[in-house]
Image (cartoon, rainbow, N blue to C red; front, side):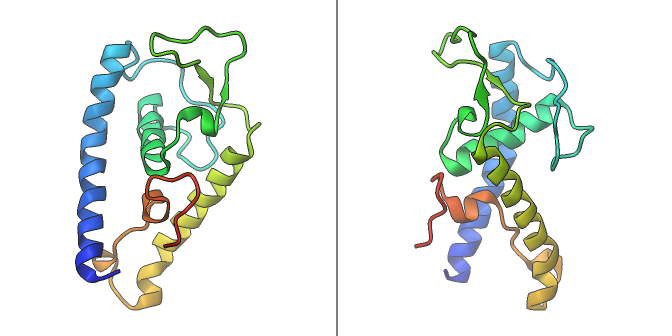
Length: 146
């Protein structure tokens, strides 16, 4: 990938990250969620003191980066009726799905790469493009290698 392509990808990711909170806030207001709701539980990688809204924003980023829905990693609530969009609510706490376990491994890997990459290639952190899920997944649940 050329430097120009890397810059374009970086700008695209930055735009998504800047627009995501605005989109989530609007969606939360429409659905009556906002920042309310029960606080998140079973956080193992994300900070335990994060609000539900902060966690949902990160999860939405995963959805976009992998082209999946919440039920890719989380189980659906048994017996819960679908919402107005036909989506069954999820139970985010259980670790029943392998995809959730894999996501945690991948989050640790990305964190380690971002912590060490600058030193390993001899560049200051400010000059290194941060790796994110979308860097490899590019909208696909299975990372794209070409």
